[in-house]
Image (tube, rainbow, N blue to C red):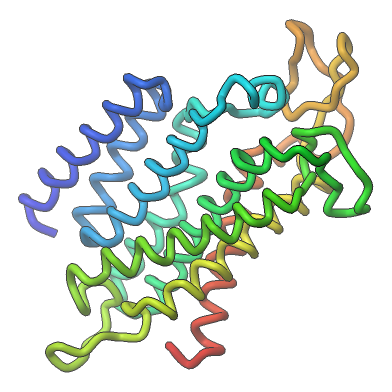
Length: 286
């Protein structure tokens, strides 16, 4: 890590976070957390690690603004909205930063594989929520298969599953493009000049992204349906993820109080990273 890398990372993070804050895609705390996360990611990792994080954030932010009015009623029941705070930033990018730090301490391609899986997981889950919320067919519970109301935690749709796959593949493709900027600096692998490690090439990264995206998003839905804290609005009777709704306190319905939306996201990203790592190992890329 050089002083120049710190300044480049800081400048890039401030520009991206500042633009997001001005568009109300980040709260003040979210913008501050994004600057810290981005600066560390660039200065400790490389443009590929930082760029993959930015690819997730920019694409997901744009999707959150798409047909926002149509999705507003559904989002009113979510614990968090598209206006991300520090908790959401940490839940979506914190594990990725830890993997980046690990790659600095003990360089190995496994860190990069897991990182791609983690970023694919949070991207796929976000895309499934944003695009799946536009589905014309009612979602079905991932546990029972029964139809549930739009916005219900653990509800899945065919459109949402397609979005999940698209999000994972998007991260795999973005990681591949960015990895081409510096062979070896990305995976931490030593290889001959001009050669590339498999996890710097397109097919393995697409596979890692798809595996991580599917595992992360589906585990997020499963945990959300079974263990996430849920409440019932005393005014409208709707099941929601937050402790208040319609201006009144909501009644606890099920789940663990500590299993918040951010906690579910972190666990889902863990599954995503593990799935991408497993895919790389089984394919012989590690």
